[in-house]
Length: 616
Image 1 (cartoon, helix red, strand yellow):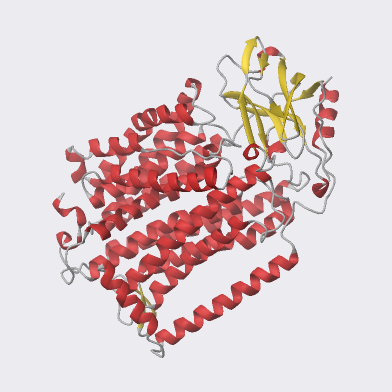
Image 2 (spheres, one colour; image 1 turned 60 degrees about the vertical axis):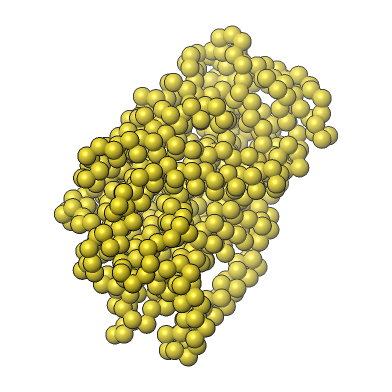
């Protein structure tokens, strides 16, 4: 019997080599490389002409921006460019994920319109950082880094450009990755995380740059107006959104990893962004930042969903976490920022998550079952506590407060990285039941848009393969094409007896759909294919939806990431992941270096001169 199950699984998932599912076409790579090279040369020429004072229009534009934003020219123009670029990249990213969920893989890098927004946005982040480095003729503050004898660059510009480079590196590495390993159609592919992380953490670099400009112009400009205050709130909303993009698969209802990740990711994003916002901006800042983030994500969701007719995405509100931070800030703990951050993180990882769960359970495709809480809290609480401490360090840097001893600051950041890594390692652990099957009886339903739909009775064998309170037993249909019901289908099955489940609505089982039974129960994460369309591009045969059939449970990732190459040596995969990890640690080290350099620079005035929260 065991051999029979093994043979069935191999037959269902066998994928002979195909022509698609790897990297982009060589012609597209050459085109993109040529365009990038030309743009880079033009920008280098402009920078050289400005540094040698042979052009004045760039300096004039920067000075005009400085007058508008009440900041030095080398801050105002790059920040304006950064804001437009990060919003462009965010829109492209959410649209891209939606297109992949609804349509599947791309015909090519240039065939996906969302890729243009991502590329332009990430390149804009890099250019914004470089612009901040190139613009100042004089030394831009005491923390500035010397490039040549008479050229000093602001720390924020250097860190921003570095984040942009890190994100842009994800594109060529992503193509190499797909050529070696096939298309891992998941947000959490290593090279995808590079693009996401570079863009997300560049928001901290923008805050660094704004701080340097505020410090350099202390006493020389009028008090910050409402417009500039809004930009500052917007920056913290950007940090919150940037740290939350790792959750997008949960937001779209296609999580490919265990559900305990979601509370941890929510708590970490909230603790980092909202603690820093409260320390820097004063009373109500955590709530205001959360509300602005809701507005931005809401606009993106409406643009991508109803207007572009793509799958809908929800998003966390973070209002419970913001309320916790504001309440903790009413205590004397606020005078001890690091302790304030740690305690706020504890509150976010407990009370904040409980309040957030009310929203998650009301609107998300996969609500939080009570069974996840012990393990979820075990992952979320230590991560939230430590990221809250890191958020406090960011807030202290931005308000000119003296940081703790170097060993304490570095230790806190390092411990946070270790805690996140440990929680991630636990979350990535999952089990696939052995010698277990699911039997299906399908009943025909009326066609939809000319495609076949059915209802199903499902029997799990053995019936106790899952417990009494599983995370989910559901049917997912995706990549059915955007004209057909937005290309995505989710149905939580109704239990009608021990191990017996029944669909509550007809499911698609024809066309380009990939429809599967998904079962998640604690550490068990497994699936059974119901219908998978034939895909000659990757050499995959159709898995038909017959009136009656029995199929074994398999690792869910083998179905969701059908384009992956199954025969790649584990050592090669490990080497690829380690390269990405090294790049990621370098980015984190760069951000920490930037904060430390700003904090250790010689002060140019009292804290109250340039601290927005001094009166709070």
